Length: 410
Image 1 (cartoon, helix red, strand yellow):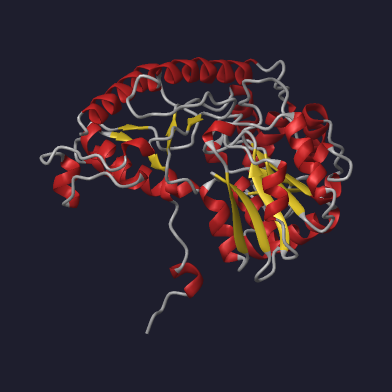
Image 2 (spheres, helix red, strand yellow):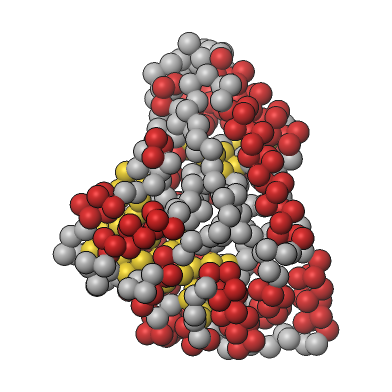
């Protein structure tokens, strides 16, 4: 008798976390592994945010907070939305959760019924498809191309819509591609959705502040989309606060209430100290904050360096990302090639031919000791994801190792 539920047995584990774990195990075995698999800034939380957390402890903010978040934090989030995005939200439209992942999960659970269709442009963040699956919805993928910067076109969006379409989920700046939508590109998609008033949009904006092009653009800025767009954000990426576990949504009141109801039965409120610290983070203006500007500038410098290096790797097709801290090179021209018979990959897997992105990533991991993530995890097996959230020295060495391993393929 199978004791584990079907919904869990049928759900894939997070491939990004799995690759990170494998890399850690190799490190523990004595291998000099450079991990480019994890989506985490290699910066520390700003000092003023840490001081706010210390103050919260001293002031005994250690009791249960309200389920949707402290009123002061929700007001600060509303002010952030107005300052950074020119979006008008009221505190009753804000729900603070334990990370943006929980925020997205609750929105999908609140809106999607069994067999509802959810449009997801591919490549996509790995958890979107799993969350839709848990809600018993059906993911409808729109395959994009590297030549189009991995962005969905209005024609593709319209062709994917059916009477069962309930929602669209996308991120900008994007994980895994690093691409972002301009005002005109978003408006073109919004114009398509104008004709389908029953479709909701989950706009994942967690990488908002790591934007190398200038002003961030939000789907909710368009009048006809405001009441059916759920804007998801948090402090993990832009404020180097991954471990604090704070995400939030701005949503129509009915949806916010539904998420609050669900959260009340699942986790209740998120950490009180993290919430108090996040008030300070929300007060940091990305246009003037030294910490935010410095982190963005360092990421941009690394991006430019890695872009130049990756173009020298045989078989890599690369586009210049406009935000986040990822490259998503196409490597499918290397599929069908063989690796040395005495390679660690061949010894472990009993094969020499590289057939897909998983094979390629495992070859690079075991023979170059560099951890990437297979593109199949993000819905595009032609590519692999590389995070440049680490030092320049490590990035140079990592790409050097990758280049050598690729050159050893025949």
